Length: 364
Length: 105
Image 1: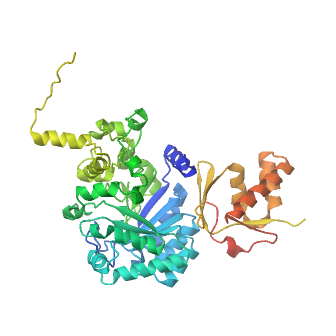
Image 2: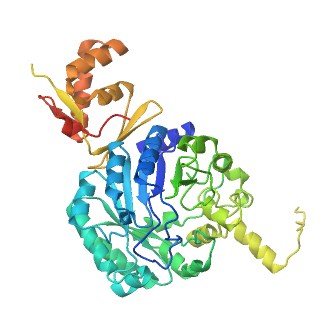
Image 3: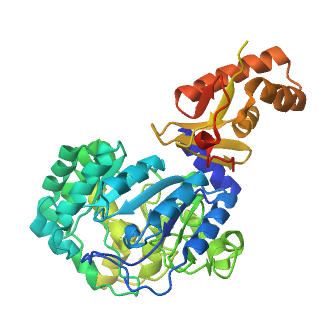
């Protein structure tokens, strides 16, 4: 195990929130077609309030801090917040569209010792990227900002979301990252809107695209290894947890609401009314999330993918139950290995109208 | 013999976790954990207190370690961390500006 892995294990055992993702605003200068947020300002935390939260997070033992949004630079105090966070010695990562980053901002981010900047790029072609962000000229501005950040020696990642509207450009976008000399990540996950609207799920790519994705060595490493059938599920798997949400990680909204993860909209408390550690350690919802082991999952505990699935409890929660399956992860496991999940078999059985009780013939 | 002064670099992330100090360099992302004694040296690296004084007052007395051994180990530790840019080392006191913002958590 790596040293970082050991620290994660230790944080899990001690109940320390090692990583926190904080959205400092939901306001944005882009209007991406797949975005799940409501961009109106419903009463963001002030500079003083966020600094107070950062003090509390440092006290609680948080090491990794992600600043995201909305677009973080829509806040005029954003660099002041980064400076404050760095004085508290957080490892800071910033997610941005980069549209408002010029030489001066890039230089300041480097001076402040920001660990990594992640920028969203959906295509190498302006007509496709700008149609997704609905901001004319946005690809050029984002690419310019990547160059400014790179020239400062900062670690930059180009982050793409694979959708029906840009799937044809995936290789071109990857080539752009290579040409710019930055890391590249690709995520095929499109989540429902924060208000529960599922219409944007129509942007999810179809099964053929997932198959191709999982066979691509450049994206997944050794695709043969990545796509091999799941190992038998043992007791360690059943006693384990499906992800870090609520265990060593959580999310804080611009309004102070605390959730187990940015993708897990279960309210657990608000830092405007309670201390962060009171929410982290004493919220009944947070404690319920962290009480759920793989063996407690209603369908997934009987699934052959239980030990290797990327099951997202937040997507499962949005689908109906935090103990239930996340169908999009079932699809990923299936397309990765060719083996259907327990949830898929259950649904197929229900759809086929087969008998409610199956009696197996005795053998021998 | 010249004194050695040490100050924490501003280009690091650091946090205590269960009695160990986690440190990550923002320059090369190298990740370290410091044991209890090394953590004391790190926390005492204010740029003004000579390393010899840190070792004598905070290490030898509190941990009952022999002076020769403690000084040798501390110098090795300081050398290793300075190579990764985690600690700044000088034979002169290091100004406040250098270690600004690195109060140990």
